[in-house]
Image (tube, rainbow, N blue to C red; front, side):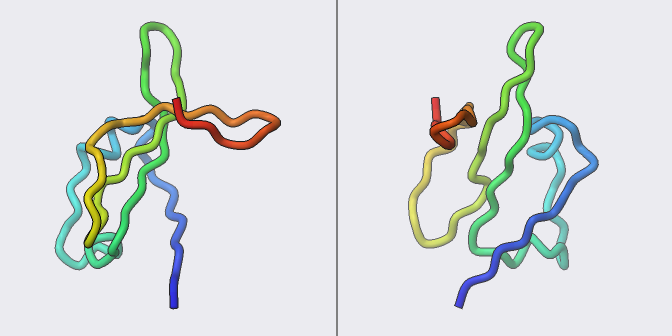
Length: 77
């Protein structure tokens, strides 16, 4: 059995999401996997990026990965 929760946030950048701590009793604190999608600033532009904040049971990189959405789907850069 699996479940996915999409939760909008008040933060406008990925950095803002990463600075927000997960509090005890927070819905995300019990999740096995937490993936943040947001925007990062590169110079004078913003780009979309993904970060895996928590993934229990499997190793995952600590990198913030920019991604692009186009006619062929999503591609990590």
